[in-house]
Image (tube, rainbow, N blue to C red; front, side, top):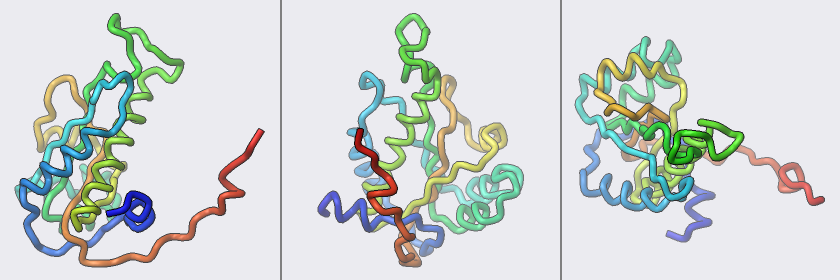
Length: 181
């Protein structure tokens, strides 16, 4: 797929077909996402793929999704849910633990965001749909899925074969987005 075409055509998908996503396809997407840039090549993104229907149902529950029914519905019918985690204390840090940037620990989320978008574009290229979910209770999800020590959840990404083809939302004009000095 042509890069610009993929960027322009990828949509957030919130309704999926009830079809298994093969592991080799997910592994190819993660391999592609591993090329996402990161602070000093720290590569902090990690992916936990949840396929167990009971665990997905629990993650989609009221407590984990903090009562946000839109996300609860999306996750509850996804064939798989990817928990994107990030290794804490690397991105934006020096070896002695001090910050490399005035952004402090916020650079971790920046790198996780780049990885999430790269993962979602790789999914789109494979004919899969995704949506990046940011409203969740990390501690409640950690009760359901063991998050490795030293990592924290950056985003939840339901994934599957799309059962809808949403139109592109209206975009701001370039003149609204850019200023030249």
